[in-house]
Length: 162
Image 1 (cartoon, one colour):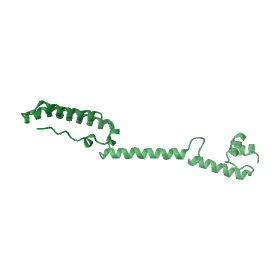
Image 2 (cartoon, helix red, strand yellow):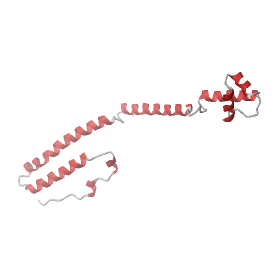
Image 3 (cartoon, one colour):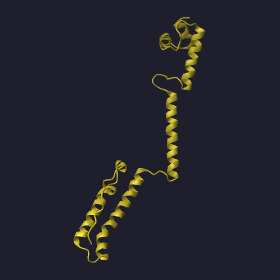
Image 4 (cartoon, one colour):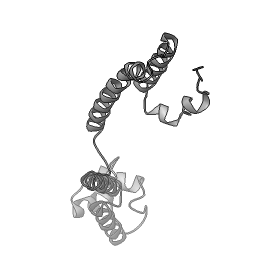
């Protein structure tokens, strides 16, 4: 059977049959019946998404889509259970907590003055410096800094003479 005759039977052009032979879909030198079985098998593979049609791998794309959908549902479920929160919400909570903690820290020097009437100004300045250091560290925090060792664990606390 010629390429043109086979193309006429299955409804494709002779150059398309030649391309199928070149890609190994059809066996060169086989009879028309063999070509028909190979061509039908090729079409079944493409329809099932197991054979790549050009650059498109339908089976791979379907698997990738199914994984993304499963990930999305898992994230939604984790969010509903309170195990996961949007980054924007977490940023707002942390900003509010930081503001409240900052206000409390600002009151410490005045509280020390009231509770310890004879405290000298050098001690108050040291307390204010430690509070400023704490605020600066909190302001400089990033996700990457979570893996860094805590400076408070490395530095010995300064002991003031009473």
